Length: 86
Image (cartoon, rainbow, N blue to C red; front, side):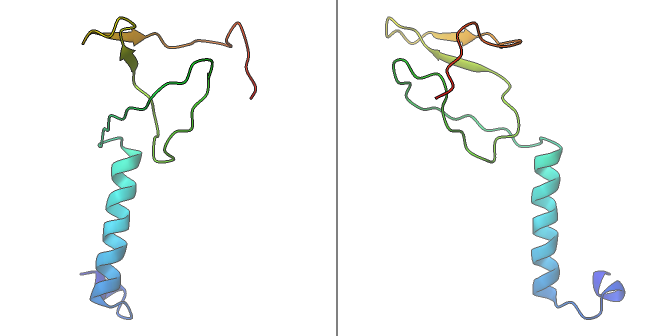
């Protein structure tokens, strides 16, 4: 059907474009969810995140006592009391 409207496009190009469109649609509709983890450094407030992350739904971390429990970090609304611009 695509070739009827775009007769100059080959099958490989059509499939590639459809795959790209499908990926973009999935990202925009937030159909895909992913969990990630990384180590925290003492005194560091900001961390680089993967560019594919569109939204952070929640943040939690392991308890300081090393137990298997996780502590939910509440969402910051507004500016932090102590700013760190490094």
